[in-house]
Length: 98
Image (cartoon, one colour):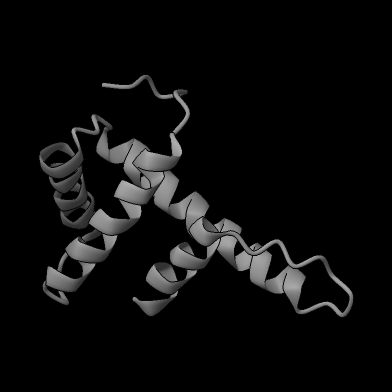
């Protein structure tokens, strides 16, 4: 398992976004966050051989959501730089849909 301070690679982040999407779509509406993140952890381990704790997964999802929200707010300002990247776009689609 990666240490708490270990950085996420781009492949791990893409796998996390995919696992988040799959888990969120198949989850019961009454699913707790603990159950959701455990499901994501299982999907990451099974499909992508990513070894992360549920706490690391929860923290990364929250940071991705926060970063996307800040990016959207920054882009509302006239003349602001438009730093569109594929990962940010995919993150926004997944994280704002649910």
